Image (cartoon, rainbow, N blue to C red):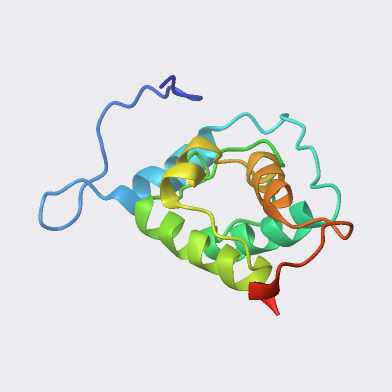
Amino acid sequence: MIPELLVEAAALPLTANGKVDRAEVVRQLRGARPQEQTLEAPRGETEPALAAEWRELLGVDRLGRDQSFFVLGGDSLLATRLVESVRKSSGVVVTLREFLAAPTVRQLAELIESRRPSASEPMDEGSI
């Protein structure tokens, strides 16, 4: 794995108990990202719906279709919630492992769309 961003810091922010304040680290990293980066808007049918779920879950105002869920502040617990939300909203099952391999709106939308039955496919008797 190759990090998308490296930031040099004199010290890590600590909680009152002396542990690393992870929430503050994420807030500082969000501020360290280059602001001139052009974010490509979600496209198609699936991407805008996924982007809305991500914005709500991650608490971000803007995101591009190629930004990593984890760079935006996501973690394994939020990823688990997202996978379940995707299953409920789209009816498509995506495993956590598959999401880890496809952590952008574009990649996840492609995975979901590849699993949706096409209108030309006949329904099998078990799905009625």
